[in-house]
Length: 276
Image (cartoon, rainbow, N blue to C red):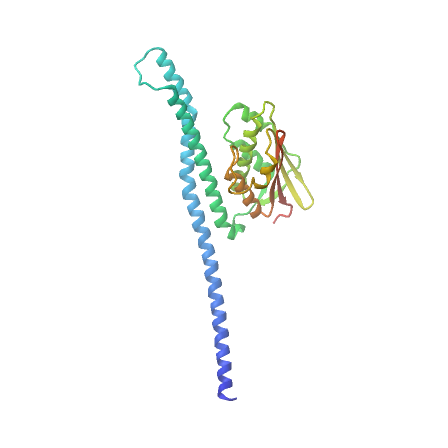
């Protein structure tokens, strides 16, 4: 064989070997980068979520006892005790500040959920577990941060376990999703005198469904297409609905919204019936 032919064969062999090595190294780096990214994402989310929960607990504690302190101050003032002068508007400002701080920590926690969801979706299979919809609903209703007896009454009467079903999900994420939807529904249901919430589960052949419907002021029809966008804002909706949409996409399901202004708002969650 001529020398130039041997040289061509040798060159091709070297190039092929280099291509295989580069591909193998690139694949190795990509897999390791994704694994490190997931670990970093979970670590960041944990480090952020822990102080947020501490702040939220502190705020809820102050909100619980602030009315008692204000009432005690007013009674002491009526008895003309020696007290620092606190104007009524200052009490109002305190209550508004606490509500604002509570909303701020809530939104920050949603941001953390979205961050973790986006960073871990690369290997989302590691977070998937078998869940019961009935169990998830019961736990979410139990953990819901009720602000009044009416809220507890509205939500406790809402649930109807028509047909429980199993699905591939994540209990922590699903709990956050349900609390977001409950919060929106409770807010709207209280805007009307006879507002109610109904929660229904239904099994299908290829898909299972969760219906969360409230009779209320209802969303305007021109807002339905944008309600799940990260840029959407209203008095009762925030990034929580965007998080719900992203989570359902990761779980290979979907969430849609139907509403009639001054009548009702309904969220329909679709879960694949196939479980692994």
